[in-house]
Amino acid sequence: MAQACVGPALRSSLSSLSCCTQRAFTQAGRTSLSLPNITKSAVESQRRARHLRVCAQVSSPIADSVPVTSPSDGESSAQASTIKKRVVSGVQPTGAIHLGNYLGAIKNWVALQDVYDTLFFVVDLHAITLPHEPKELIEATKKSAALYIACGVDPSKASIFVQSHVRAHAELTWLLSCVTPISWLNKMIQFKEKARKSGEDVGTGLLTYPLLMASDILLYQCDLVPVGEDQRQHLELTRDVADRVNNIYGGKKWKKRGGPGGRIFKVPDALIPPAGARIMSLTDGTSKMSKSAPSDQSRINLLDTRDEIVRKITRCKTDSFTGMEFDNPDRPECTNLLGIYQLVSGKTKEEVAEEVKDMNWGQFKPLLADALVEHLTPIQKRYGEVVAEPAYLDGILKEGAERAEVIANATLENIQNAMGFLPRQRR
Image (cartoon, rainbow, N blue to C red):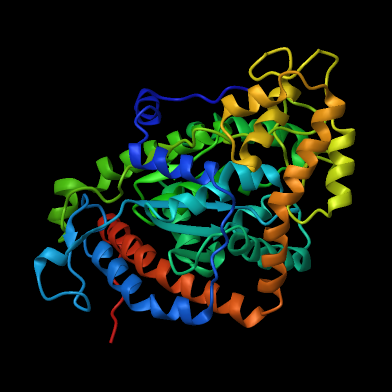
């Protein structure tokens, strides 16, 4: 894939990953997967505290971190807590969620939910930029949400919801499309690649979906966005759009129209995990593991059986070199498979390199397959428990959407006010 264009502002933000985030990612990688014992009562017991935190943040959506005291906690200011920075992310419900989605995104979310105020959603609106089957979309959306929970995302810590359940996503996308130059969208690398494959029948949504992605981010006034290598250009566009809106409609102009003035949107920074940002195909170590790849052999799906995992690892592409090593540009498959083993085993890169340096592929492949089965088995067990209780999953998605709407609607009202729309009168 062609290298994304990254501006100076984003390059600066990529190098400023906070120490607390590094520790969170490291802790997630060094320990075995710990699935929370999530119950309905556990979610309900934290509802009030989370609602208070959300309301406190919405009251000043672009303010820096400030002390806030919860009325239920607090008799004294000494008990005040600091508002956490906010992180948002999501995965499309197209095809099966695979190892690349998990190691590159969802597994890291589990660490982030303890450090940040987090919103994780199933991005179903993005899933219709190409032809789709409606019945399959509904089932894939439910399956994706259930896998979030099965992988360790805790609904008592993070808001889990479906993108289309918060209508502000689509409405903000239209507003942003009216202020974004078409030339910015024509430069997007992923659009060029997918349009080339789709030919003349490519839909308009494929061109404008980066603005939907920008809406996903800007609606929640988030501070940080977890991004992979191929998504950096989209975040750069989001930052440019936020700056453009702030410059055209924010500041003194907004204040003259009766608004509070200042920035309408917070400009987010990138959050790059130290490892696992990009898991490659099992059939081509230079291509990203993808749901859209025609061969299922190219990926490990999270719900694959033991036999399927063993078969795929046994047949995966390797090379004829002797020994195992990281970071040899002539051995992309070796680097990819060792990286996967590192992440699912919880070992450091140095530990893995020492363990496998004298192995051949016949020795390493069973080791990797066993590590994958051991890591994915508890996820699959928890997934079965979640889907067995549809009302439980529906309740989590409903509550998550309600939490998200509080923030999203406040942002939407701000941008509508700044752009001169007549406010809706409410009783």
